[in-house]
Length: 97
Image 1: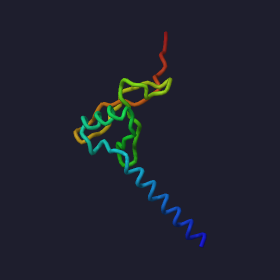
Image 2 (image 1 turned 90 degrees about the horizontal axis):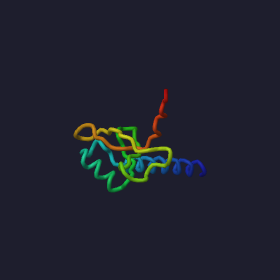
Image 3 (image 1 turned 120 degrees about the horizontal axis):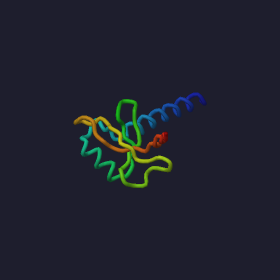
């Protein structure tokens, strides 16, 4: 009996993980304008950018990044080609001479 419970629990966890992965909006199925509008309306959103890739994208002017991270330009694939968006990245150090 315990083996059945373990198998059922494992199956339930796999189904839940699959449904969470598919719940993320996919930039490849949206236009650039739709992608940018979604980010602006949500302020920050996790988007799928490929079959196994995703990231958190943010609006340019806001406080979605924790220090020392800042909004940096990123490009995501959309139905109409590459689209410019922003994500939090740590700035590269300045080299002084």
